[in-house]
Amino acid sequence: MNRLATYQRIARWYDLLDAPFERKRYQPLRPLLFAGLSGRILDAGIGTGRNISFYPGGSEMVGIDLSPAMLARATRRRDEVGRDVALMEMDVMNTSFDDDSFDAVISTFLFCVLAPEHQLPALVELARICKPGGEIRLLEYSYSKDPMKRFIMRLWAPWVRFAYGAAFDRNTHLYLEEAGWEEVENRFLVDDIVRLIIARPASE
Ligand SMILES: C[S@@+](CC[C@H](N)C(=O)[O-])C[C@H]1O[C@@H](n2cnc3c(N)ncnc32)[C@H](O)[C@@H]1O
Image (cartoon, rainbow, N blue to C red):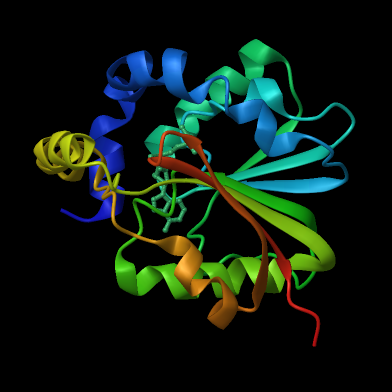
């Protein structure tokens, strides 16, 4: 099943299924993504809009997603929170934004959903639309090196693939340089499982 079909199917259950992880694991991490950011900011793969409550005040926010059903949920959350966010149906690999459109791009758990062959084109596209001197910040999963945690993650993997079209082995940071990004930070925030990646467009 392709990613669009997966998220069209799961949109109505997404927040419910993710609730335990959202409360315990993701909510403390989301504000870190936005610390110090301002200007025009893109939330790529916005999903149901879980980041919206943490958007920096005064910033001009834009959210894109492939799935209209997920965007419908994000619209509802945007209106509940009362934030001005432009929501658009778009593929992160082929957006309609002009070059250098954003001061920053953030993305939470999008790249673990993209297939390995889509990591590079997505990062190239985000480099195109991010201003020089701007920044990309990603939260992404990796397999733990701890044998027991890795074993548990392997047990989870078929469900994660079925429900979310996602995987723990995307290693998005390995594509940054080829895509025109210079890595400035890469550190784990939850054990050696969830990492924060920060990069800037490489200077020519
Ligand atoms: C795991 S969810 C994460 C949602 C949200 N960022 C969060 O932190 O809760 C991944 C999201 O990426 C979207 N997505 C998948 N492929 C995409 C693509 N090629 N372009 C844009 N969005 C995409 C899905 O529809 C889904 O809403």
